[in-house]
Amino acid sequence: MKSDKILGMDDKGIAWEILKKNLSPDERKKEMRKRGLDFEKRNMKFNAFFFISLILYALPTFAYHAAIEELRFFAELQVIKFPLSAIIVCIALLIPIAYMDRCAYRLRRKKGGLEGAGHAEEWTLNFIREGPYKIIRNPTYFALVSYFILGTIIFSFILRFTMLTILGDILLIIMVNLTAKYADEPLGIIKWGDEYRQYMKEVPRFNFILGLWNLRKK
Image (cartoon, rainbow, N blue to C red; front, side, top):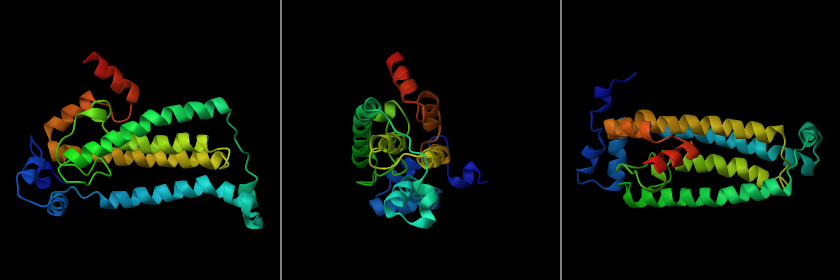
C-alpha cells in the first residue's frame, strides 16, 4: 500500500499543484496519472462487469425469439411482469434523475478543470460542490444504476424481465459502488486532501434522501 507521501498527498491534496501549472488538458491528465490518479485499469474492470450485466439482461429475450435449442433453458425462465402503474412510477423517477445527471455532466465539463472531459466524477481537478454535488457525491454513478434498474422495469414489456435481469442489476450495483468508492478514496482524497475528507462526512455517496435532508437542515 502506497503511503500518502508517495502518492503526493498533503492536507490540501495535489489538484491545486496541477492546476497552477500552465498545462493543456491532455498534459493535466498525464500529470494526474503520474501522481497516482490512474483509474483506467479499474474502468476496464467496470466495463467487463457492465458487459456481463448487458448479456444477462438480453439473454432471455434473445433466447426466446431466436428459438435456439441450446438456449432453451434461458427462453423458459419465468418472466416477472409489472403493472402499468409501476412502469409509470419508474418513468416519473427517471425524469429528475436524468436531469440531475445532465446538470452534473455540464458542471464537470465547465468547471472540472480539464476543459470538456466530464464523463465521470474522476475527470475533475477543480473541487465541485454545487448543483447535484451538494446532495450526493457521485450523481453520475447514481444515475447509471437508476437508468438500468428502472429501465429494465420500464421496458419489461419488450425485454423479458427474469431472475437473470435481477442478477445483472445486482452485479451492476456492486461494481458501480466499488468504482464510486474508489473515486472517493483514494482518488478524491489524493486530489483535494482534508477538504474532501470533510465533504465525505457532510454529503452521502448515493443516499439521495439523506442528501436532501442534510441540505434542508443547512
